[in-house]
Length: 266
Image 1 (spheres, rainbow, N blue to C red):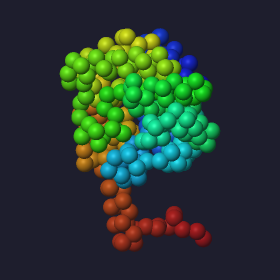
Image 2 (cartoon, rainbow, N blue to C red; image 1 turned 90 degrees about the vertical axis):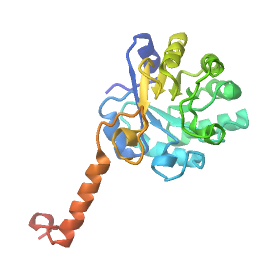
Image 3 (cartoon, rainbow, N blue to C red; image 1 turned 30 degrees about the vertical axis):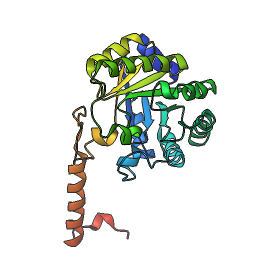
């Protein structure tokens, strides 16, 4: 299987070939996902919610991201591997930003990093990119700003907010980012941003006109059944399957149906 690179992703935009991306946090899932030819794997700081049980992504550390990236790296067989830089690992100084990005690449094995924000972190994006680390931007709903924005809701409802997002996207591109994630923004705004950039847009809750799409794999596989955002399409209902399998196992053990003759050593 051909290895996907930053150049592969940029070429897909030029050819109008839709880009596919999923989150991933462990070896076996990475092995399964990459075997199907996914373009990009994101080791998202969403692992704080879906794997570590935190209320949000804020407690996630650089060490957490490196640990999970190393696991995903061992299972990945072709996708471009992108890792989120967690909250406060890049916002304070450019020196911190470059140092932590370098750790994620050198220790974790990522091939690119993703950061949230626009003009306010543009010096960090440029510094990371200048240090030869590929960067993906992230605009719209930025989960690391949850305490500021208040809740996970659609962004850019006013003309000023829409204009700011467009401006942020342009400066992110100028600073050296090779792609930008647009999360929870109106479809027509995402379409306008996609048309005005030479780098690809990756949508999550941003409609049909982005250059690619990304979902949290636990949402897509139906592992989380207490809440489903509007933009998620379930391609499986694994929570139901897993619960049924565990219940059957418990029943079999209690009733003496497992182990059976074929499960024991002679």
